[in-house]
Length: 66
Image (cartoon, rainbow, N blue to C red):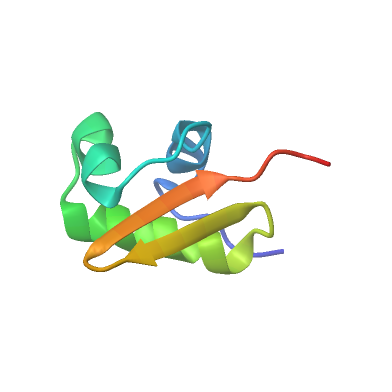
């Protein structure tokens, strides 16, 4: 079991739609760097969280079951 961070659960629920770290940061009231770190942590530790790097833009989403 991976230890959950302070924002992991809140960020995980935001991932119902594709988002950027900046959008997550605005919704949670945290810095963009914090949001990026939490999103990358989720992408590496949860199999249903995916991300794509398009130039300087990172997009994260939760893969639907199936």
